[in-house]
Image 1 (tube, rainbow, N blue to C red):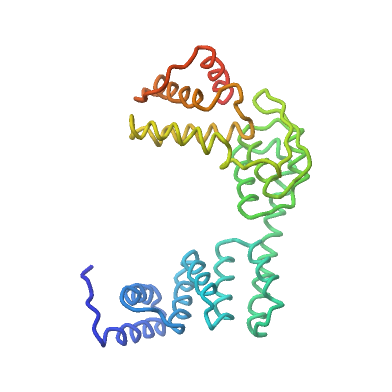
Image 2 (cartoon, helix red, strand yellow):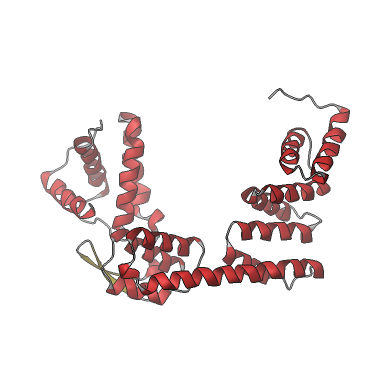
Length: 309
């Protein structure tokens, strides 16, 4: 695309073209015109509102959410209009719980009656969607043991992503009393942690009896394995074998999920890093330099790895 040199009439021409495209419901064209406009000029309040309408009409809900959020944080004078766009974007992004919570926060504020009446139906629809999602989840949870692994995983991810923290007791009972894949156990713990479940949970994972309080767990992304072991292994591979990094990340992230919340206390961090580099070198033919590993440490490591497969 050739560079456009701003000149006095360009701004007026672009605004006219934007307004014409919107009137003709040519929203994709209007979107492109906005992109051109923003390369050269600052948006005013009126154009900001029109851009939100264009984003909504184009179905660009993620961008609409970001745009509306920025405008709200900047104190846009048309607060009532912007907040409706913001809530609508959340609804279309299926963030139903967030929709309900936000409308609960703002419906008693000093907003226009028309704004309140625009928001309340969206809240009602979001509540209905939540009820449908909760009903579907409850049906799966009733027969969780018999449910396919992939469906178990998808359900738990959905519950976590959408903050449906109403199945704490059910999932605590499931993890304590049913035989589950280690990945499923990890996701249940993450769900309970995020839902602030503070009671003890006891279960067996890869031949180890575990007792934890979910609220005291760090989260899968904040374990020592994730924050220290994986980065050190990857740092070495960036020197020795950059092309193997994605394979190594896939393996290490898989192990991080399976192990959670188990800590490998029998092997110190530096030895564990060396063990993983040796494993990658010997089993996947990856070039990797590593410190010598004592046979006893290697045997302990391999015993753990075999349980993860």
